[in-house]
Amino acid sequence: MVETNADGLRRDEKLERLALFGLASPALLLVLVIMVIPVGWLFYVSFIGADGHFSFENYERMITQKSYARIFAKTFQVSLLTTGLCILIGYPLAYFMAGLPRHIANLCLITVLLPFWTSLLVRTYAWLVLLQKKGLVNSWAISLGLWDEPIKIVHNMTGTLIGMVHIMLPFLILPVYSAMRAIDRDYLKAASNLGAPPARAFWTVFFPLSTPGLFAGALMVFVLCLGFFVTPAVLGGGRVILVSMKIVSNIELFVNWGAASALGVMLLALTVGILWLASRFLRLEQMTGGGH
Image (cartoon, rainbow, N blue to C red):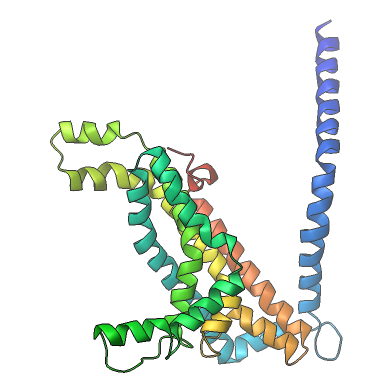
């Protein structure tokens, strides 16, 4: 009798798994079509040489030519600087919003999300208009006496960072604000009752509890910056060359799909490696703010 019940339970378990697989099969098919097949094609093309045969020349070129190392270094430099500036600006802003009443904080969140309602290309060209030598920033700065003549703050690293920070800032504020909002303020009151001044209570109690959201936001910003194209291409003026821009030039100028695919594979491998390293230090639920 016991064995019959065990067999029935195992059979029911198998049927349940089959039913779940059947329900998930449309989503799995969609992932296969839009992700697995294109990435597989990318890997395949990256090993096709100029003569149309299997070759490692696309990867050898990245090792032997120093320009590729400089491009990857510049990409990581821009990504790190953008992430750092977003943390410096976004963390205090999220902390301020988390201390507001709920209805006022919701209004502030709308202002944070407002840039998403405008096209990325429009926002980038708006910064180009603002930052050019005869733009509003230079005009106002000269009127206020901050400097005497127009300075170059576009088509260089400065303009690129300004545009990228503006676009990436909401991606850091949202997870940090979510993590801060979930922190019980009674912890800070308890720290104060135990004699901790406000600064010490913040650094020893509040900040450690907010680090999962901060880590998640910083990781999201950094990974997105690695593959960013529009803003560096427009505001960099060809002087800030990132991996994404090199991929586009390999296709548009040289029609070399193999070289472009190899760069894409390397960028994908680096991104996956960064995410894997991040997962070694923090669990997924903590990265999304759910590990308090």
